[in-house]
Image (cartoon, rainbow, N blue to C red; front, side, top):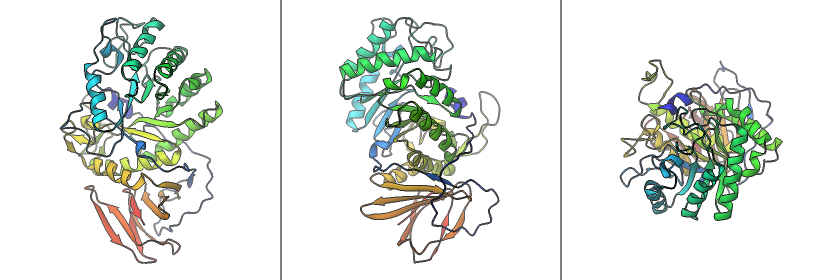
Amino acid sequence: MTRMQLILILLRCAALSIITGAALYLESPLTVDKPRAPMHLTTPSTPIPASYFGIHVHHPSPESWPQIPATEWRLWDSAGTVWYDLEPRQGQWDFSQLDRDVAMAEEHHVGLLLTLGQSPPWASSRPKDPPAWRLGGPAPPTSEEDWKSYVRRVAVRYQGRIHAYEVWNEANLTEFYTGTPEQLVALARDAYGIIHNVDPQALVVSPAITGAYGVSWFRHYLELGGGQYADVIGYHFYASPEPPEASIATILHVREAMRTYGLENKPLWNTETGYSITSNFGAVNPATGSLSRVVSQPEALGYVMRDYLVNWASGVSRLYWYDWDGNGMGLGDNQGKQKKIPAYGYAIISQWLVGATMKRCDRDNDGTWICELTRDHRTEWIVWNEERAGTVTLSASWQVTEIDSMSQSGSITGQKLRPGADISYSPLPSLIR
């Protein structure tokens, strides 16, 4: 699967010069053998909404609907939803699958983000371009009018039912887009005008760029004026094969670019991220015969939780996990009919975060993170370490009485605390309250 190859590109966490003055409340007794730069993230001042939690579903059915509290659904890698499926021949439309997806989203009270693009061969400017799925798909259309007709037809049909539209997927990768940034700005301009004319309440998301290596492409797109044709800035903050914290550097670089081009007040969405998940480490990639980096289900349990924590702390206001029912990358097994262990992490971190305000999120030089939350006039803390387990002594200033710890099977264990108690931490986040 091409997605598997993409996420295995190393995204190294760059050194950051960030304010580090905020003191952490824990004192670790561990001997530090791998010092890190302390980090303080300036967290959003707004409560965390349920809409922060998104998912990808590829084979939706009553039997395989996600068993997690996802409230947003991105339609990508989904059969029957891109342009070459909807209009396989000029003027001949097939909305059967997309109609079913929209109806299912409404049944489950889930918002929809539809990714536009992937030209059908008859409209493609290079109909024999190597495809992500079909020949010609990555190339922009030959005729601007064909593109406008497609966008208008979709927006009219799903007015008030599809809530957001994303203009193309991972345009910095030739697997998905072989046009120029200038051509993509023109496509985004057309889509922005048509969608807002047809459905003023719908949001238009900028073309999704992926990876740390995509930041220069993204900056060039903004330099050409592409940001003015978006209500939301979209990006894919994949960290794989590194832990979730490696995505922070890329998020901050993207936010810096947004400020440079006057877009700092627009929401930033991570419209796709995830990991290859298996019960074993070091599985052989059948496409290459090489050893691929995958994460075990217990490790992925912590990665899901930590990705949602550090993305919000870094300024991302929506994250669509990739995915629910995609086999190796899915949180669900058997095409989504059963939950994998990491799905419990998705549900628990949603429970811990939704409705809370994150006041701070800091890392010390031992790799221990503390995120402080407020909810209903009380304070809570989420604690984890990037790679090791240990114990810490609670500060007397913390007025807490219990800790909820996650086991490697995804279950939660509650424990009462006394003042000055020692608590355990690990790469699986714990909630102290």
